[in-house]
Image 1 (tube, rainbow, N blue to C red):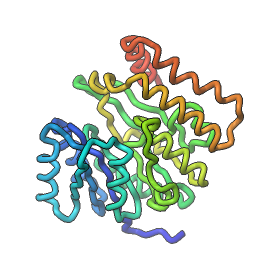
Image 2 (tube, helix red, strand yellow):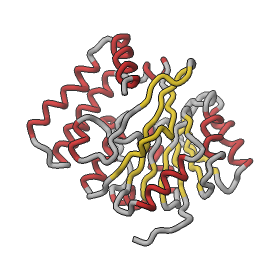
Image 3 (cartoon, one colour):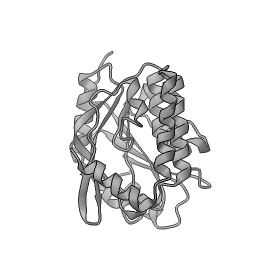
Length: 272
């Protein structure tokens, strides 16, 4: 594989009702030490001032920001696929409209892909923050294997950077109600099933907003979706059939009262 030394990054962003946080998120991209990037935003029918904020960046940086719009609310899977159709970068990166990332995130992810030509997916550890500041972080596996998918998604979706050919090989995100909130988990399984591999940088280059609003979005139906995708991983990655019992774990977690789950969730991410 011939490695370019000035690869272009296409950042795909589905934006929806994130007016209060979008400007701070986009500023993180503008300030990146790696400067060969474009941002493809697609608004999923926001009802606040999200579009106005996005349009401000398109006007200020016309060669680097693009704004698309859905005619009706379609969900993240559809929205990101729409962004992918307009992306012409060598690498596809993600960013959410309510999160933050380090100024050298792109630089370090590009470096990892240059040094590891057999790796198609690069993500990072991430910190969690709310109105009171940083309260926890992830401790990811350096080189996830097929068995890693039994525990859940091994990569932080919003922090990832992926070779474009991996997205093309699996035809992007699959669109289904069964995949809502687990579209990334399903995506990585498809890529691993096609022979692609990934790695996680062992430092927090991404900060995810995890406050009460985020907790409120964790509905039981998404736990069922997670169980479905876990079963899909076992089938597509040819894992042992006795692992189907692990599909019950998301459902059992979903049955835990929300205030107890919140305590468990935070405790697990504060431990080393």
